[in-house]
Length: 114
Length: 114
Picture 1 (tube, each protein chain N blue to C red):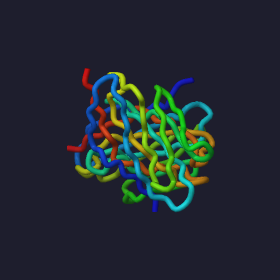
Picture 2 (cartoon, chains in turn yellow, orange):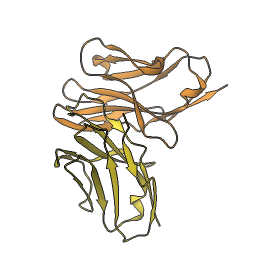
Picture 3 (cartoon, chains in turn red, brown):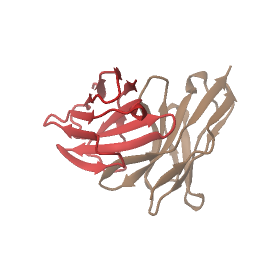
């Protein structure tokens, strides 16, 4: 079974631009969560989507948004990029996702904001 | 609110030596606890998890962890470290039933000396 895939793997943007990252979960998984990983703040939860609905949201500004499609693929969007948005963005999937279940992580998208 | 503390930022051990990585959590109820490992350029891989039952849990790659409620700890151990264990290790606590978001510690980087 194929793992979680994320595209693109690397991305360079400039301040003020917007970016869209994509995540394809493991086949059959309906929950997709997004995390931001930075050296200063570590791993922080952004949001989770389950059956096309946002189920949980972390403490990030509204510039960070996401969505999930009927095939469970998910995208996250960051508008008006800031230097501090440079990070590794990880997505994780599982089914059905009851807190105690393992999440399967993708390799991440490395975003650099110049 | 949930939180996780990993007091050791960096640990160096010799190959073949034993290993213990510390993790302390803060959570009001019985926590869902996880240890993940991240190799350079990779996503996170689950080593083991605890949510109930036997407080000593076995994981992959020869790792084990012990849940101690009285100490709010979930330390990771391995009796004999291999060079391939060099990576970053993250302890995490789950937000609870119905919620998939994880709260991560800041990680412990493990260096293995031949």
